[in-house]
Image (tube, rainbow, N blue to C red; front, top):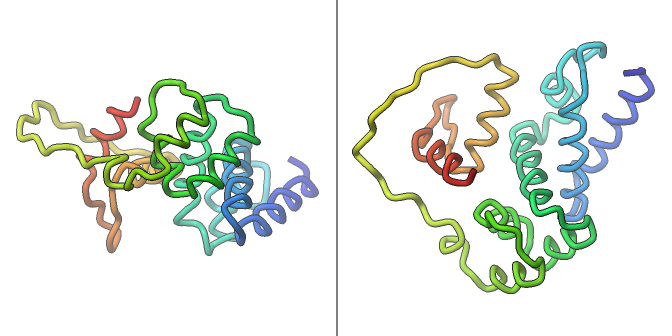
Length: 178
């Protein structure tokens, strides 16, 4: 990437990082696109490094925004319809409902279905099971681990003092949503 392109992307992300739900949507879309660029030829070297350097007030939210944008695009609704649903339902309700809505549906039926539904009924917590038959142990490079943490946090994992809580249930939730 050219230096001018990098500066333009960074400047755009800085402006969008402080705004309304509509701007949050634009920020999520911009972050998604920027996360798929090759940052190795820039002064930042990685996407995560750029975020930590330039937009550090949202660095913990970046991967949640990227995941939310991916959810918003999964039904192939137009940008206008996505923004209309976002305005109608609000950010949290819209993203939560999109995470559980597996089948393609009419966007207006979707808005009607989730408008008055309490959040806890949209995405109930999975039942605990004691019959674990496998355990997996592996490590990931930091860039992948950061992305994976963001995805698991959308499914209920929390990080407190650098310790991950609820990893098992968030992983099961992630697999159930596929």
